[in-house]
Image (cartoon, rainbow, N blue to C red; front, top):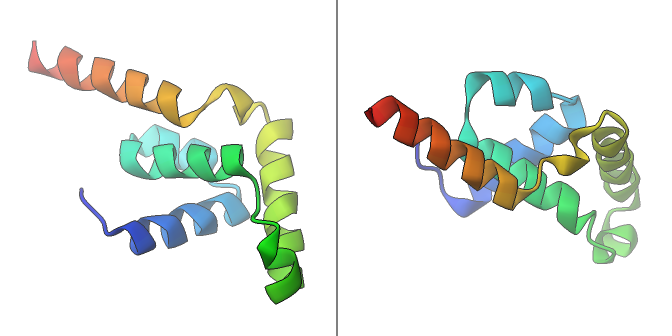
Length: 92
């Protein structure tokens, strides 16, 4: 399931804001899960605080919730590793 960069970012941000990490992981949407992890690792862009303060606060809260729920170990690199293992397992 290939998405454009912008579409993927918007979907990942929406999933983060809605707290849908488990649903995305359960669906094994590796591309979306990796982008969610990347967004959480990068944190909310500080520039957003000046351009859209409400969205900045909302995104910061969602990222904090992401970490508090224990998803911190789910880095983009870790998602790629798990996805590669899953794909290799299916080929056998």
